[in-house]
Length: 149
Image (cartoon, rainbow, N blue to C red; front, side, top):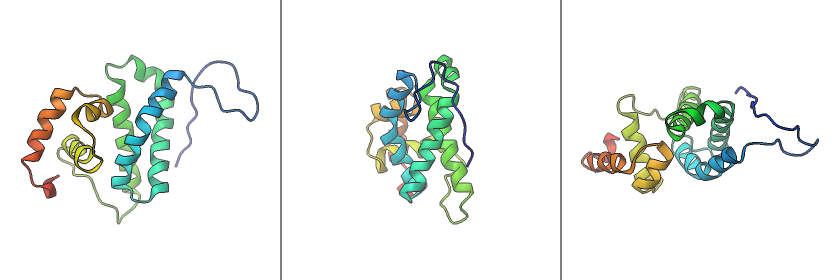
């Protein structure tokens, strides 16, 4: 696991105090942490491993925060970082389940809806999509057998 440093500017914190982070970044983490953790736990059943994966993803989001904010869809970019972080940890474990290579976005939708229990608007928020798109894709996913996701 690599440690990355953030590039936030501002006054240096007092020794022993937490580093200063933009309030927008802190709010983003607060909003998405429970959902990201629930998703990570589907693939990484060990709670510590799942939490470490989410923390690693948030560290990468912090490194890229300024670039993410000017991207067309910051939430979608952050979701891809989380997904990539979880997938990287899965590659390190030969006995771990594997996400399907085809249709990973639909697989993520199914996991977030049927396993994590999120509604279409929440999934849209987490994945950086729009609710109508998510609802339509969920309707199509319901036509498939659960083993197909």
